[in-house]
Image (cartoon, rainbow, N blue to C red; front, side, top):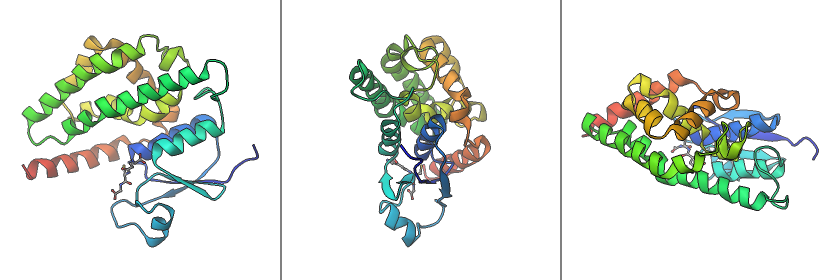
Length: 233
Ligand SMILES: N[C@@H](CCC(=O)N[C@@H](CS)C(=O)NCC(=O)O)C(=O)O
């Protein structure tokens, strides 16, 4: 495929937009970046690009795509690679289904609990969500990562499973030490869900995942939002 003209409308603090950055980095696709300021109302120009007003949005040869999973899966499908095999390759349909199930499980069963722990109204509530996170990781994620090496399904390179979940794994691995969530969440995971912990650690060190991450800014934003949640209790 000829080099496409790609524009990514993004904000580096957004874990959903971060998914598109991981895909673009792994696929080594050149792109122009337009940072959308999320602290002010979206401009009429941006609302024409994404009427929902959210990031990310992708312009691919002037075709607009929105929603991070749609954007990331489109990129992986347009450029079959180590991330995701084309669906007509032998064995690919099954692997694609396994990756989709992993990402769905991470996002639908686990991820929301991390945000609840971050923005809990009391320390006791944060503790309870941290413990719930560990329990769900043990039950739902640990069995899916038995053959991670260190990435999904025995891969030594990132896959689409990590594209869709890496930004959240990175926050899990980096935020506890700042007191944003109870610190024991990581030590508990390392003993109770060792496959999951090793995978989180490997994902969180990968340059395609860490590339746009500004830990200090994410911590500052999380602390501000947590203070607001507690003040409204
Ligand atoms: N389901 C969307 C969620 C994207 C999303 O929530 N983006 C946030 C930033 S992390 C946003 O644009 N928020 C703007 C707002 O709510 O005004 C996706 O996966 O793309």
